[in-house]
Image (tube, rainbow, N blue to C red):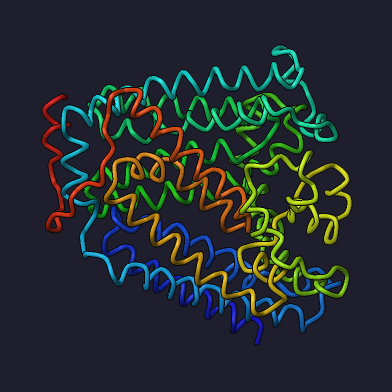
Length: 451
């Protein structure tokens, strides 16, 4: 029965992915979300041999977790579809947004964001290192968790958000003349490798940078079969990197770069992929059902109360701002992780479960679907959201699927505020672009003329 429920999750997500392929440039966000949910909560647990599953978890918990996953993807789909139901039907991006991108003002904005964000990303990383008290020359030789037990300074935390601006050039470069695209690709690939190396194996920024490239490629191009295969190959590469880099970071301090590449390319690296992050993440949903409220009481909406006061530093407002629920969850399911100050999210479904008293919390997935449907729509119709959501979407999707709404909120607010401010600084007037008739925009005339 458990495997059957997981296969139903696969079926629901496959249906949504198939629908997204009918207009990939306009629905790439839907494809990413449902492919991730279907892989983690459907295909991976269905294929994992029962002998390799964590024996501590009861069959009842596994059955409940599988049912939660199925209910979650159904509600997520329903919320997204309801969000789309009351909006005009367009293909790709709206003609108004297309015209804005092609306009002289739009091209000037994208050029300035390209150069400013590229430089800012590098400088922000330097500031974050200095703020942490680490010498630049020591960064490559410091153990991954060497400073996890120390308090992160506010300057260091703020600098890390500015590092995220490095994702922008790779995305917007696709909507500028070809020379920008080439520079953006080289910059993004170099920055992704650099950030992975200096963080001793942190994958989030590297995968986010590569995801920005993928998003730009999909939205920019018409997609005949060969390009559709290229997109599928790009998605597969991102997945394989998420798996292999998890293994690389365990031994990278003892390896040269060629040895790391060999690890990435080795078939042996992927033999236990179903049992490790990110493909094993459904096990944390099972742990949620197993341990809450048996070992720890429900959190009574702590995650969402925390969202309301995200701007308050908990150091001074601990009576108002709840403790990080991901750290609480880590302390319950893997105490060793909590002792090293490494949080563990409970998955999207699990976040609702631990916050809102079990099964009633699954309704959070309906709200999540409406929110992601709204973001996907704004990305297709608004210049501001196009730049922010288009570039950051893969990063946002990855933390959302893991069950980190607090991080999604902070990343989203930071992206909107920072790009709006930079746009105004560069003299661009952000307005909602008009919704014109559906278009396949085959030529992007203004961009082509600049080549």
